[in-house]
Figure 1 (tube, rainbow, N blue to C red):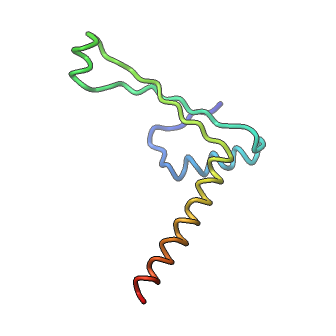
Figure 2: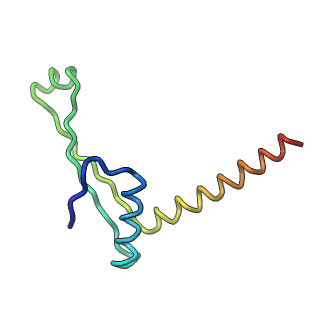
Figure 3: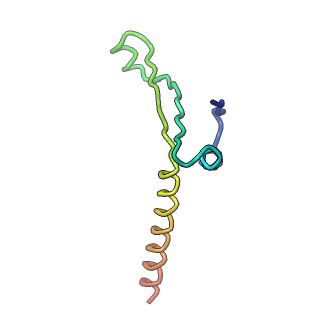
Length: 87
């Protein structure tokens, strides 16, 4: 387990995750948990106290690969539409 700083960018997170999964084995997954305090006066009044929500981010090799394939497909579609409009 490792600590992840609060100011990490999404690109850095994905890159570090991909390296860790490649090293550990692609059948593994990475779970990131973060407790986030809900800063809403209405929620505080309704519950009578501050409220914290636990966020879970699950990263798998399949989710990283799917994202790359999706971007390639979207890029190809956008390029086709661009050339279609130019004609």
